[in-house]
Length: 143
Image (cartoon, rainbow, N blue to C red; front, side):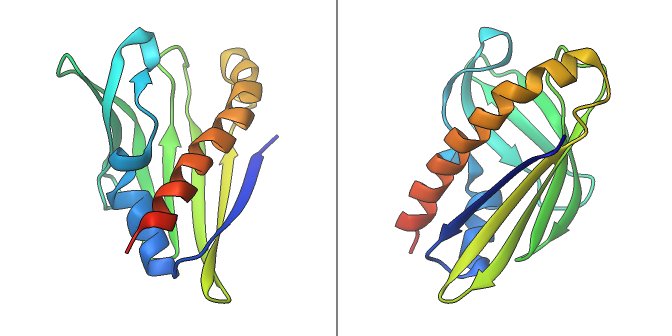
């Protein structure tokens, strides 16, 4: 059962993509994260095979996943894994020109792989609403 989210931002795809990928550390919510560590930065390395990872205040990092598609300004995709999971899920974000703005469509799939992953799906459904709300506020302020 794939999580699907769609929002509209009033910026062209080039800006919407750049803010999502290159400025993710500026809009992703900070605070307690995996294992209770305090998140200070989030990074997407802009290339296929690049890391998607969190950085914490104690200097440690956690690789959430790897970039599986990076095609500015239309799509970014990456694997997603929580520390307690045995497998990974997949996230794909598409940036589609719509009028003077961009429709941002997110799909998070792969929830059926094991019980731990399947059980987490419900919290991620609401979690993506929160994340995309932060993104939408940031991209709206982008120049």
